[in-house]
Amino acid sequence: MRSSNPVFSRRGFSRDNGGYAGFDAQYAQAGTATNPYATNPYAVDPNTGMPAAPARGSVMTIDDVVSRTAMTLGTLIVTATLAWLALPVDPANLNKSYVIAGGTGLVAFVLAMVQNFKRKPTPAIILAYAAFEGVTLGVVSAATSYYLSPGVVIQAVLGTMCVFAAVLVAYKMRWIRVTRRFTGFVMAAALGFVLLMLANALFMVFGGGDGLGFRSGPLGIVFGIVGVLLGAFFLALDFKQVEDGLTYGAPREEAWLAAFGLTMTLVWIYVEMLRLFQILSGDD
Image (cartoon, rainbow, N blue to C red; front, side, top):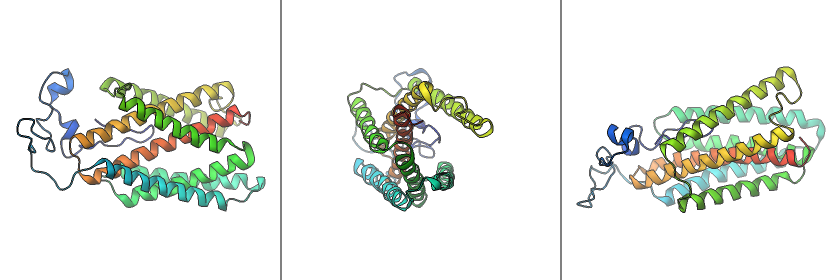
């Protein structure tokens, strides 16, 4: 499976090693009972219990995913906190704050794209992405809390945690089943959402005001909810990616990709939550 983030397309655990994406064409297209382990070099032979192909070093475990995710999120939280504390509580600096957030956000975007096109995960790039993304979120959150809507930041954080927990429970209980159709639907919906947001941003830049109105008022609430739902769907794809990596014995280094994907998705959900609660508070 080629799991993807709402903005960035990430390779799965099998670009150059078979795995889930290496299932034979008949199985992938028709869903027949073809042996899905036929081209998977990490699979275990169900008859012998032995690896069907020579092992390639240590394999990824759930502890690897948890520890790498804790490192990326920890880096993001630390830099976000430092950025928050460094931001002067002065409305005159609001535009300056947004310029800083835009600059660090652009750097984070470039780093994410660099990692996306690399064949293997690079921990330094992933942690650097988390650091710059943290600065962006810290500045935006502080500006929102100080100048626009006090109290919405903690609401957005709690909302993000609740979405994560709810999707995790739903996925573990198999209330959510990630299929090819589900993945296609989510990708199409996310593409449409991103294009609409870009169009709205362009109208805001060149036309002024609220652009097309997708980020304010009742319409902004609707699009905020849609954005959160898309983030939840992509969490399900991330969980599926992790599950596949564990099932098919992905190399330990792939845990960094799982952490990278989860971090980007949680950032997406937090930003959408922040904007949604800001609108609901009446300060849009």
